Length: 176
Image (cartoon, rainbow, N blue to C red; front, side, top):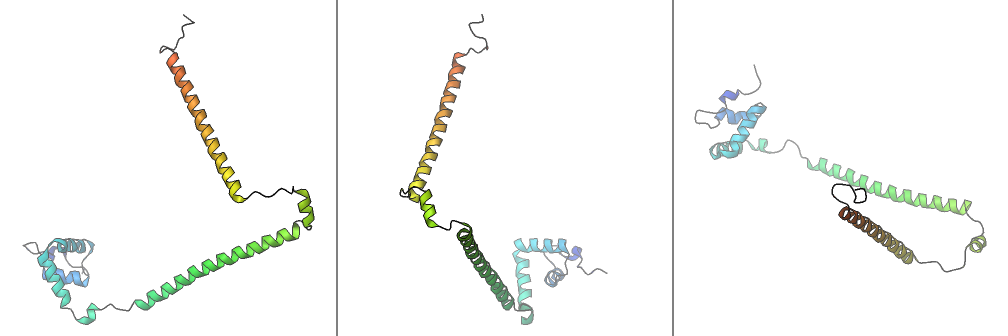
């Protein structure tokens, strides 16, 4: 004997869901095809939808309530995720600080021990500001880009000029 409701008894002669079919839908004893057919029918048949909602409203209150409260479980999950996010942020920041101190220690340990030796090797001209260096680099990039486009245009124009002067047959006037 099958646990599922017989799909042949799902609809009556007029094309509406039978009472047994509605109960099977509510109880979950329809197979996948029957549940799909019933759901599709309920999406466009107001008469059967009213009967189905009346059947659900007539159910005892204990069946209308969820089986368990999900709020504590969701709150615990939210706490765990927020803890993970905050932990990841602090661990990343701490790793950056430690790396900075390690690099600082390495430079101070293995770097120049005498600051006067550093100043003796470099010229005493004032240092360029970062903004000036950045502006110079950007201007150089735009100048090289402009030069590239000019060279491309000149090459294309010379190629077009060669195509205009060369005859269509491919032979030149000198060889004839």
